[in-house]
Length: 73
Image (cartoon, rainbow, N blue to C red; front, side, top):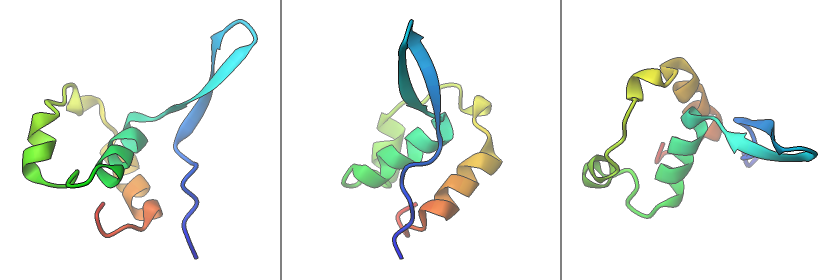
């Protein structure tokens, strides 16, 4: 069974009467790693120059990776 990929988002109002799904940072990062060829390589990850990593919820990040059930993550 394929895991459900549409999770880890909040529906936010972006303008009056208009809403958008916005990914949690803990979901956006694994999505990027998974979808980018070579996205799990140390060199690629260093090139991202990620900031504010101390704001990531590491438990949530791990839960997202486990739920995705993909070896790359």
